[in-house]
Length: 407
Image (cartoon, rainbow, N blue to C red; front, side, top):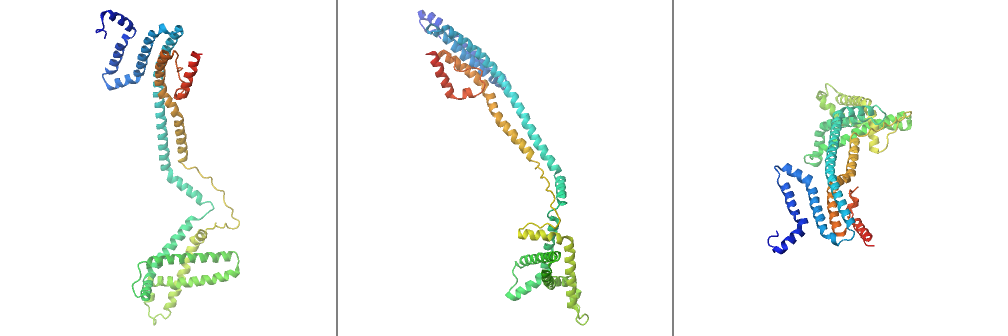
């Protein structure tokens, strides 16, 4: 490097450059150490464990050796040398804190991995357990709630199902007659929607029949004889309508031999058909009423009128069972707490990842600041990121220290 210099200046320049002439050789040796690796894993380990300490040592050596040239021109040389020595002490502590910080990052990451795995396993276990025991829990809840006072849902569902079934049967038996009547009136074939409209009409009529029975029994229980006679008359008209137009057609379809009888053999054929239809109406209504009609009709009327069901006299509402917590709420709450814990610990994880490298960089910057301004800017070690993440605080510290140096 000094071969092209004149001989009279060569020895002087070599003597002056002696404090820093060996540093490039050291840098080349360090670079060869990082580049010469037998495998990628070893190279990665070298870079992770040694790159920041190596850069700190190189910068510290450069600043220390360059400071030698400034000693003749400095005031307070003893204090300056003391700060250089303390900076080397801080550099050693920074390297040690860097390695300890890396170890802490690894242990914390492993701990968080175990925590997340445990949380995932717990959620999966609880979900599998709830799915496995869901049929038994649902059966127990339904049985428990059913035997408590309340809405008789089974009777209500059976009543709706029976009305649908009866409407379907009467639609099937009445459809030919209704289609023929509509065809005679309109002069064309019956429309395609005749069947659905007839079904809905019959469904409403059958539900109205059960409603009339319910009102008749309520009037009898309350002993309102004035309205009882009116309801009996209404019920007779309902019975006549259903027997005449519904059950008679059903009886004709089920027992065709009645319609095939001649007037000479059986003069009361029509009367017998009507009587059989009346007995069928009474029998069907009686069986369905005493089985589920008397229990399912009040909820139906309450549902249509959007009014609460009236409790029987002397009956008291049973205590409401405490609503059992939903099975997934506890795992979700635990998950929320775990997520909150992760958010709270994310700042710590950021510090764990940042502080090791920042200690090394701060120690290197202290060497440069001692060389330029004769005082360090950072106090190592850092307790948290707040002391180094706010540039205004660093500038204020620099101004304060400059005022102390230049009173």
